[in-house]
Image 1: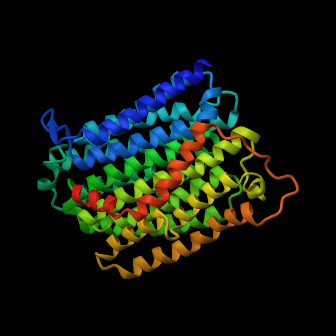
Image 2: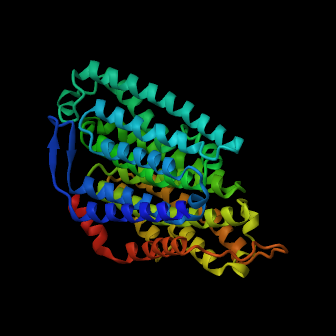
Image 3: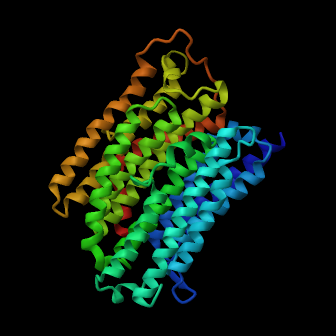
Length: 436
């Protein structure tokens, strides 16, 4: 009972934070440019805040039973604070410190199922991969400082001349971002961590953490490292194709629903990189819009997986066979989420991928856009495979009817409404475009 009352208070405070962040935002610079904010940055933070609020709703059943509920939200909100500082960072030092603040608490969260060995393994893999990427990032920052004489985002562009040392420094920086975004070939930690961590943590990693890295990555490419555009657009094309292809191929053969969604998220990152190639306001607005759409779609899928895992302890796709017979509400929410992730109209996922591909096509790399479109077709297979299991396949022992907590049901309905309305209400994309 104590947990339930505390959780309701936390959920109300998270909702209030989302509302305030949308209503009150202003441009500004602090600490000689080390921290800055704008309408777009405030909107990006609102998306991340709303993602945390939805996670608190969708995982209510798991959170109510947790003996360490206060510690869970302390760690999650500490990570969210690090992401806020990271998005607003104005130099490489603040960026690095805030990136570590956003990563270390999540590693502790991955080990939150203390009685499960797989959870400890997930935390260890995340710590080791994060430590390696942090070392690479620090080395890249030191080279950038040595090559340009500054770590300020505002001053770096004027010092870039495309020398081999500067390109090498940027490659190290790019690699660190690739680790955090699970870009191929730096994705090997992702599926194991997603499978071992509790579903609320997996949801946070998949949506909020990746969204924050996507926001700061595109800002870093378009502003301080804009003079190296001819270098990083080729790098983006190569890793984008590899990420889409590998993510799709590995998603096809997954049986565990969390590993399936892990490789699905890797493939989605490949599409985000497609939009980044645009190198303009269209690229920024398409990426921010897609992260908003992805938040609703992925959290809906993880929400259904969380409900089923908490109720019957099943996480394999084969267990979802015949789910529609006993749980039609959950089946429709999951189907809607998967349709959006696949980019099937009229869901918001279709418009999100359309804008990303349009942004990439604006640069003129049409063969690259064709490859991205073909990967969308491949992804239809494994997304629709889950839908077929739920609606068409027979199961002698289907998952029994699950009683939905009102908070969970409300969260699922919000996600489903977002999947539909964000795509149909054109003013949302236009508003993001005006901020860009």
